[in-house]
Image (cartoon, rainbow, N blue to C red; front, side):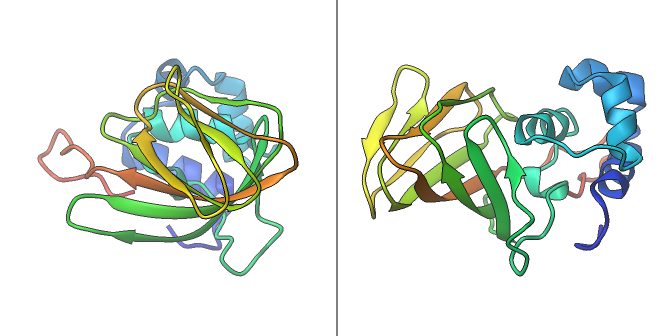
Length: 185
């Protein structure tokens, strides 16, 4: 998928590449079939939690559906308390790593578990944040980082003023498809 493809084209292409119907994707993700259809036809924008639900169900990294924000500061995707922009991604031997610039508000962002093996690393650039797995959140200040499991429920929020962070998403290699080939994200 090219970086300049629309969200709809990316979603439809990924869903079809996975051999998944609209109904099946709706069932797996918990996102309504009508919503998925509207997204695929570029009739509505998506919230961050919706993109996470869809990519988790499709066993793909979030960046597979995110606009490329490295050069476009208007490409942020909104969540309950976060605006995130994909900056870059690269593969390592163990993970596909995606780097996001995110701005957090004081409202707590609840994140459902992502795919098995996903890890997240948050580094605070400006302000203070409370972040981590539910029941094991930590407070971090400027320059501090925390790596935690993204495959269990987790949350984050700014403490005080708006906070800027770098968020690294670490995705394990995708499982092989039914025909023995790996899925591409």
